Amino acid sequence: MPDFKVEVFQVVLPPASSSREFYHVTRYGFRMIKKKYRSFRTILLDGADWLHRLRVGKLYLPPRSLRDVGGDDLDDFEQTGQEFLGYFTTICGLRPDAAVLEIGSGSGRISLALTTYLSGEGTYKGVEIISSYVQWCRQHITKKNSNFTFVHADLFNKRYNSSSSQLAKDYQFSFPDASFDFIYLTSVFTHLLVEDMEHYLCEIQRLLKKNGKVLITCFLINEVQQQLAEQGKNQIHFQGLNDFCLVRDKEIPESAVAYREEYFLNTLEKFNFFLIRPIDYGTWSGREDGHSFQDMLVLSLTEKIPG
Image (cartoon, rainbow, N blue to C red; front, side, top):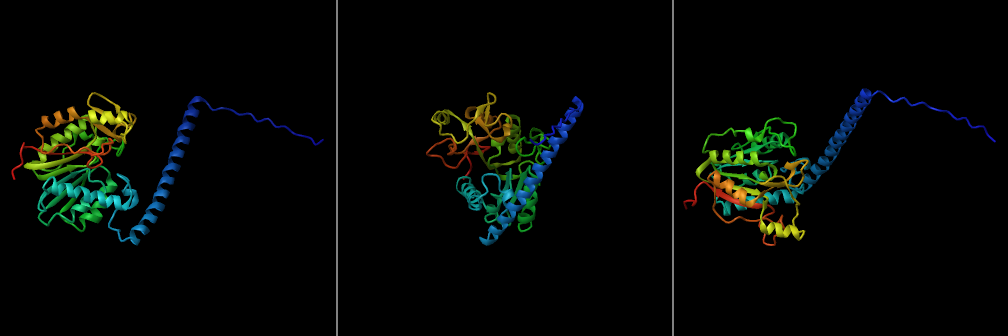
């Protein structure tokens, strides 16, 4: 029979402090590898997307990595912009010469549509917390449309901008009082908690002209929505966070926020906003008569808009 040689290896565990250090170093290393992998993957996907946009004649749209809010499909991206432009003109009476503010301007999904509607007398200001979105919009929209301006607000949001220390509830928008005929926020209050949301309403009240209008999309919790939730028809499942709002994920509450309708309407009234049409409820809750995806409210600071 052949001889077998057995070798015994002694494993010496490092002291507790060294173990902790080894753990943190290893964890940091894995995070860096993951980050590099994501960067490499983004480059590959953006390259393929550039070829696709070139082939279909849509290089004027942002790359795939900047279309990650609301889906990255090119047609969906453009159609959403046109959808809201339609709401602005038909429901809100937006004029081509209006002064417009978008809070949460993203990578230009709606502002690109507005470039085809606002005249040279009209102005657009977009405020966004993600710097890469702002940079793209400045380079590709402002360069061709000097009346379109994009502002980076480096505000903390656990879902979208967790590295910042500046809180939304303390932020003052850098525009004079009564500057805008029309202010809109699409899927912004869906990522803001109570204090931030109420502060934004206070700022919107300050910035809106006397006869101006506001369009907001959000998730509202009400009796019909709750009934549909019990039937398993809600597309997003929320859990209670406090007496005022519910969230999808308590670990990252800003990932999706819904407000109890009674509280939300009372809060609007507190800041002197009035609904100028019935709430257009969305399809997210499973409503068959839903208008858009999210619930949509159109507001003014007067009970009746002249004209």
